Image (cartoon, rainbow, N blue to C red; front, side):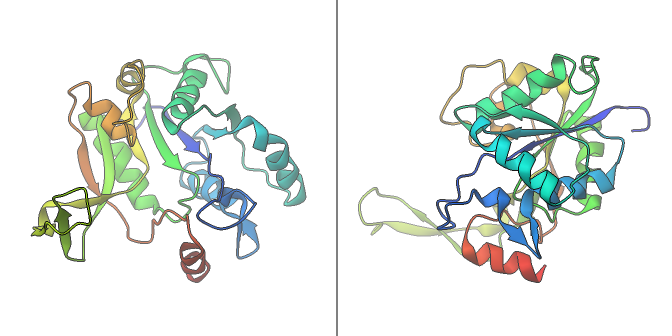
Length: 235
């Protein structure tokens, strides 16, 4: 992978509704620092030369800049405005790379780009590296972890009275960073938006391109509820 340019797009558009807070979840503090800063610091410490694109709603950008001054936050990053949905936000981040942000040079389509949730600060460097390696080899990769609890499938739409156990060994929980060759991801996000696009991998799969699974780390939780925040304090 030496010589291949790598980028990371950090998507942070949460509103904190499930957290029961007026403060967007990406700005809530863990051990005295906003979650989003921890995430950016993690990627910067993985590779300090890797450009970071932060996709934020325009309405949150002034607040973020104030937080950066307050916490003397110096991790280099480029801010791009988010869109109506996560799909549109990622597309805006990709367009920024293709237009030459952050250094004025359009990113090569052979580059690798990792798309990561802003509220997942605990992804390990080993997982990030494995995702980049698999994406360079296969074009598309994402980290997953095994399902450890029994799963049941609900077969009716009313009450769930018809249901059955399904073999959990055939299922995985999906994490980020979902990582791709830039040209492939560009082509995928040129498709019209669909509600079936629940993550970047589903957008790429709609082109007919397979996605390689990489072993994730269980600590790489997405912090969306007060329980998650309590776990994050421990981690």
